[in-house]
Amino acid sequence: MPAALIESIANLRDHLSGARRASATIGLVPTMGALHVGHARLIEQARRECQLVAVSIFINPTQFDRADDLARYPRTLAADSSLCDRLGVDVIFAPSVEEMYPSKPQCTVAVGPIADHLCGRYRPGHFQGVATIVLKLLQIVQPDRAYFGEKDAQQLAIVRRLVADFNVAAHIVGVPTVREADGLAVSSRNARLSPEERQSATALYRALQFADRQICDGVTDAGSVTHAAASTIPDNPLLKLEYLEIVDPDDMQPVSTIAGPVRVAGALWVGSTRLIDNVLSTPPAVLQS
Image: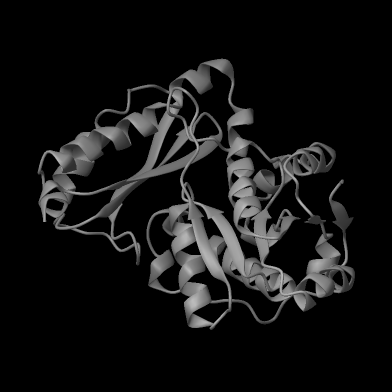
């Protein structure tokens, strides 16, 4: 049966009321559309764990720090709906900007130090927009479980903190990053890459892997690891490393000494396309304890 395509908040709440009365477990997969195999993995896990699966498709303008990035973001609702149908999604919530923001919001979610580093340093206001729209979606759908990809590790950490701080009754599920055969993390932005750029784009994941090997070999100085890993990025005019940092996996704060599990995260410009990726790395002392 095709997924119900719903565009209004009132109709969505009415549609979900029956499932809620029947105590069905509701799963939400929030997306901005342009669905790919990474999103499919989120939906598949939600389908296994929930009796009703809702996918939201909304390109949230408040989380874009560049107008050209918002304008270029792919809008593929027909293809997205077909994928949802194949994966057994029950409800697609695809509201307009006017539906989600009938007037300019005066109350937004202020995100603290968890957003100060990594992407937050380079995209002012981005995580305020993310946190605000996620809270709105969680309030509208009121899911039992909500699914987010670990590729966006800082976003996932912020959402988890958001749910804890605002006492939201939803369990946040992190789903491992899906990668292409050569290691490139699957992303909607990959479609923007030219063939030459696509070939060069794996440099970020290779740098992260190098850092992970250093940590697994017992190197504990984070600065040494990041410097060595960054130096593996080829001297190529197509590539510009924005950041490569080692942070605590929960609060996203930089660490100077690696004494436990850490998140190694990076952002790389490939031509005019910005890609992000990360790996979770655990030093040998922790593995042996």
